[in-house]
Image: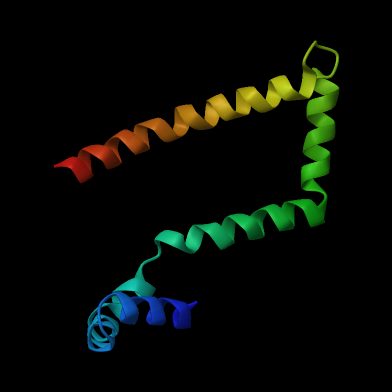
Amino acid sequence: MLAVEAEGYALLSSPHAFIYYMQTNSYAQFASFTLSVIPLFTLMGALAEQSGIAATLFRAAERAFGRYRGGLPFVAADLLRLTLLLVLPSLSLWLVHVLN
């Protein structure tokens, strides 16, 4: 990936500009923990699936809400709504911080 980025950057500007960019910004790019949550989230899902927690949770939700019309999709939609309710205040604070 770095080779493709280097070639594209060098072709669009110049090889000297890419070298300068790597000297000044390389540490800042790798020191940022913004994208580190993506592999951790994937690892969490893999661990939940391999340990059987995910299947147990789905069976429990099916037992609790399976008799209702909609059943498990209804539970999934409610969990999505709950997640949005938890994320929106943080998102609004982040937007206020970014826009100021």
